[in-house]
Amino acid sequence: MSSSGIHLTTLGHRIRHHRVAQGFTLDELGAKVGVAGSQLSLIENGKREPKLSLLQAIATATGTEVADLISGEPPNRRAALEIELETAQASPVFRQLGITPVRVSKGMPDETIEAILGLHRELQRREREAIATPEEARRANTELRLRMRAQNNYIGDIEKLAEKHLKAAGHVSGALTHRTVIIMAEKLGFELIYVNDLPHSTRSVTDLENSRIYLPPASIPGGHGLRSMALQAMAHRLLGHTPPTDYADFLQQRLEINYFAAACLIPETAGVAFLQQAKKDRNLAVEDFRDAFGVTHEAAGMRMTNLMTEHLGMKLHFLRVDETGAITRVYENDDLPLPMDVTGAVEGQPVCRKFQARAAFTQQNRTTERYQYTDTPSGTFWCATQTGSGSDGEYSVTVGVPFDDARWWRGRETSDRAVSTCPDEACCRRPAPDLAGQWAGRSWPSARVHTHMFSPLPRGAFPGVDDSEVYAFLDRHAHEK
Ligand SMILES: [Zn+2]
Image (cartoon, rainbow, N blue to C red; front, side):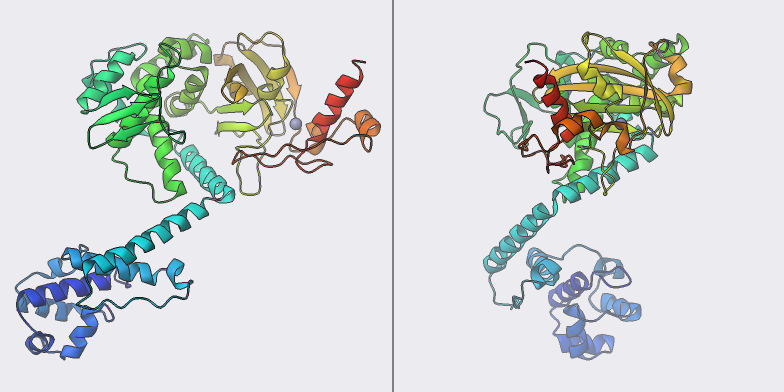
């Protein structure tokens, strides 16, 4: 790119295209516009940027417009191939290989350029794939979360798009039926097909040629996951997605299709009306929101983060924590102190043991939400936690707010209270002194290898092993004898 933003290679190709179309040689056109043919050659090869007055003269001489000459489009297919090759050969990825670039001659067949380009495209694809290291993935994920935090985790355009398509499919109120989802797909010209042999690495596959969306079979009749997956597959089309160029782009698309599905399952207008009424009644509860719209507890909690700051002015946090205590999904704009790695990533980090999100796993009655006030270095927070189990084991879903906003929520009168001083190690990360005294040096835990992308290794006396957990385990079993 030149400083003026014009791609010189493309410009050169466009000038050559118009010169050749008029049947001029380099010298002939040069004579008409007052420069040497050799100068014109340099310009056509993208080696020199022409002055605007010269561009004007060339346009006049070839019977075209300056605007046409500086258009970003390659003038023809051959030029497109040559431009792509030149760009690929100028890229750092190629140059660091130390291979001499191919010089394209007039007589070189298109197929030869195509073959070389095929190798370049594959080289670039592999390079992009290699970039998606865990560190890059965490960084991209963190950037996206912070960007969404700055906009209240709310995307107005997708809300409107969802309501438009729901209305067109005849949805009026309440839970979105599977039938309505099918109608939405039909209106887009798609047929939903349930198959048993989807590739393991996919959630759905869309056949654009034959307008079919392939989905996994309903393992649970009437299960809610299918509506969401079908909506997500449609969202790629409705949002005009093109194949992601990098990991950040991939994450952005994932976020958008999830958002669209959520906005269909709990439409903005009805969802906000429900929450406003519940707040008025001082009876806000994730479980009620969940049941009113027939979605999972997790989806209801996450949806609250889209709507409550934007429409009710309430800041809040959402945590999904797995049975190891690691955060698997998170959103906060209420400054709840969360564990973070050096890249600023929160996913995969172990949440404080004092948080209800983690303490809930040790409680007996887990059929309903548990409430807790937690004092932290950033103030006191109230939260409601529900546990459940899925294909990845047990998990907890927590939605919470700063102390002052607890008054709008059901469960505010709880007497359960905890004190968290995390990230202070003494809060919950160091083994209890008496247990450490008993077991340190007298035990040998063998670490499990973590395969999850976001999982950092817990710190402790043994790499990859949480020794406070190990010592508590040993203590428990030693007393069984
Ligand atoms: Zn702690």
